[in-house]
Length: 289
Ligand code: SAM
Image 1 (cartoon, rainbow, N blue to C red):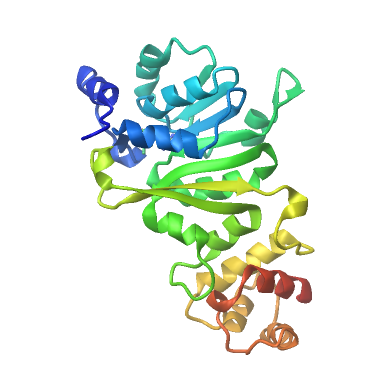
Image 2: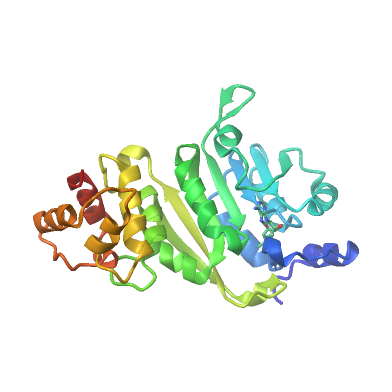
């Protein structure tokens, strides 16, 4: 392989490392891609970086060098990787490794302050474990006030879904959540051959540039309600929007109320959620209740 990352391959051999499928461990073994991710993330030397799943540290090392006057916080769930990271990256004083499940970490606390001083917004950079891509992205978007950008390697289809609009098969709740909080930039497709072990699908790097709250493309009165409507609409994709949303008793909207709101928006009462834009979901949410 042209830009093979020998360190990762050597570390795997040296420690006879037991690769854990359950943790989505597909290690990147291509230096060009590692450099490409850090370039795409637009890391500057004073940045605070949150890396999710440093693995054997191949991306972490590049990040530590790029943000040499800033900080890299790397959260890794697999405790077997911690001593290896300490040995291979011990030289970097700007690195903090946390042995935790990223979905259990209090991100607000981790990213909001250091020694009582408010931090600059962080950049998130990760070759994400695919089994938790969606919950991790949704959690990061929810904490968007602490984050400048999210640059991640994900399955190619998931990267595409993040940018889709109505009319596409993969358009859904994830597309709408991403596009409400961020401007997605598809950076590059990455072949499955760049990983060890080789996954069954190709991947892609995407950068999400998070909006300041006042710059978001829509301003529903109650964003939480809009997202509950979106989730209800896409939970039952094949139903009409009026049927799917009225079916969700926790929302408490009758079919008639929804049809009447759709009429006001000059939309058919048989329209499905997958045909509505983010703007239309925002308007519908304001009209309902
Ligand atoms: N960054 C490394 C690379 O690019 O070679 C490893 C990427 S590998 C796709 C995903 C990494 O995330 C693994 O190291 C895995 O152990 C870790 N991981 C899996 N689930 C995690 C979780 N819930 N919280 C934190 N790290 C996790």
